[in-house]
Image (cartoon, rainbow, N blue to C red; front, side):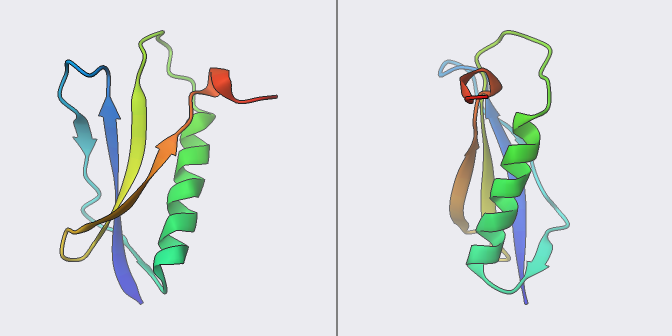
Length: 84
């Protein structure tokens, strides 16, 4: 088992700095594929969450290893663009 950390990175626009919610606890998972699966599940959960404003916001789940190296990211899709 290896620790993986799932940070939430939000960009309101290209003119503003990113807002980062760091995952300081992480999760112990067997493989990077397991970490990708969890990141995709987190993203899908966030897609269902109502934001309450009309600001164009892009959000990514950034997955890091124990050394802080960014492994990959998964984008949270805009709910209004998801087919019903």
